[in-house]
Image (cartoon, rainbow, N blue to C red):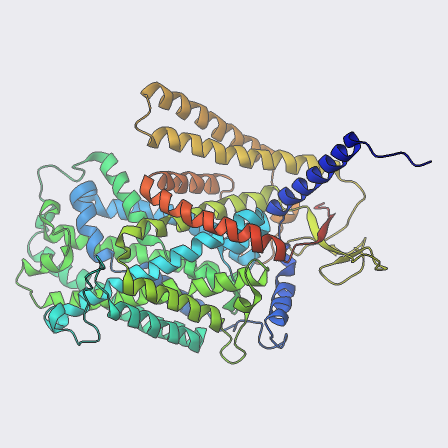
Length: 622
């Protein structure tokens, strides 16, 4: 006789189901994408978007080192250099401005080296989003991708807004601009409409739709013109300074008027002048030889930018004492003091070229990130469509351009500029953490699709085989390895390494919070700094002794980041410090954007992810 179900039995069953569902929800937040599934994701996304699956799903392999340098330098050297030298010299570094540029360049190089290794290991579109998805988990990858979408939209809009004031100089003022470029004042809007900015964004969007080779060619021409203007500043300014005995350095306060503290605070400001090299990583899928060209492209980009920045700062501070520099137009005003009024037009031309190059570099990566997220099922598949003729994600490019154009037309985005930095610094931090994970605790499981109920097969791997091959099974990084029945020692080693990486991040957050939160009592800050520093150093030393995973240390012909784990840990510290000092209002705005992204992920991305309904088969790294 069947036993009747009691209320307690129903409650127990409900609790078990709820527990199982909650565990499944938590597991989906940390599920990781196998690196070897990138091509399959492209194929399935193309099929879902209506592509032909063979020709239209791939981006064009058309970029080489010169193209990457053009994209990187054009994205990095914006008009900020024409303003930052005056602001930082007056308020922070003084004559030691050159040293501030050097320190900021070294700090940026730490992130660039981390990007270089991951872009060689995983040369696919998506940049930091793609790396985070493989190394950390789906939820973190979604937030990084969502933050980068905001970064590039606001970045492109703010750059476009800065072009019209420089163009107005050539026409004799805003009122003499052509009618279709003149700013329009509307009573019910606090900010004037800027049709010039919107038109420029749409023109750049149309250029990007023509193809990556055409876009990089135009970017190269504009970047060369900008570099020529900067070389004019260096050569002509150096000649004037030499003729006048480098009078700017003859100051009683010496080379360090504000001490090393001023130099370091200036470096924190100038760090953002190097942001832009990550645009090179976003084009990884379109590089002919990514293992060779991407590291060269990033390193040469940063080296060239650092050289130009330092030389310009040497010349300008040598022409005029740092305290006499104009904070708004430091370079042109320095030449004007020596009777070279005509140099204003040359320098303004360089600023316009720099802004246009930065605009191209700001809009270029966004469609590729959107495309990568759509390939993975986190966004609707139509965004992953690649035009079979131009081999670019045309729909994503057009929609990205329209959004940036609308924002540039209606809003003064200068107050939102800090939000651009949040996305960049979050991406830099996750990339550094991803390098530690790849080296010390790479994913030890490979995704396996679960068969439908009633199917004869139990598990089907993403590579298409019905069951894993015991002798030749590829791990997540392309290494052929055996799959033993048990590997407890390696499992424990990875768990320890993972715990150390988590402690490193927490220690960095505690240290930076103690240093940055000046409103806290000094004894609390001292205790927090000591405790966080102890955790950070201890976890780093422990990670060092645990040793790197054997599979990740095998050379695959690509670039390997040096000085691991020290270099990524320093990178995490620098980026977390800069994040903590961006301001309360900036974090409020970014948090609202991230909350919207979290809602979209919960109700769409989590359900339609390409990893939904997969199990995982553990693999060995021995």
